[in-house]
Image 1: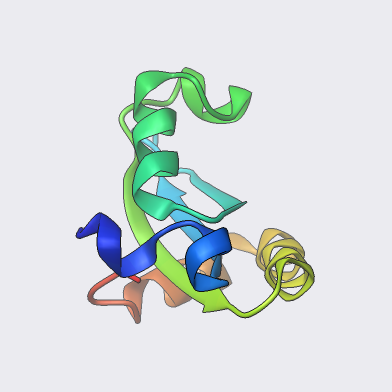
Image 2 (image 1 turned 30 degrees about the horizontal axis):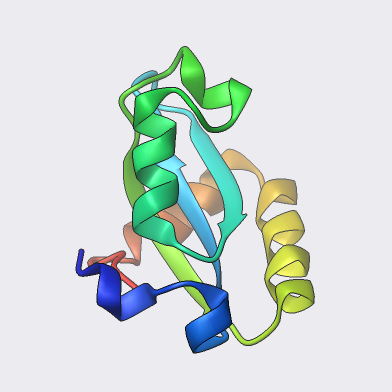
Length: 98
């Protein structure tokens, strides 16, 4: 992933919703302005408590939104999905890079 393709929200206005797959097969959904940095934080154990004991994580899905509010609404919607729907979401995403 090229970090210039998804810089921070201040320079690009981009807000991302992402789904990572944890080492135990579970999915974690989050919001960020820098996908590459956030996935690295998950793998370093400095991000969400949920992923700390489930490392390494692998990026499976990314969506770009114009506003923080829009991205956070989508994050919530994805978190409400059942596992089968999340699996469908990540399987349809052949290249998760933003």
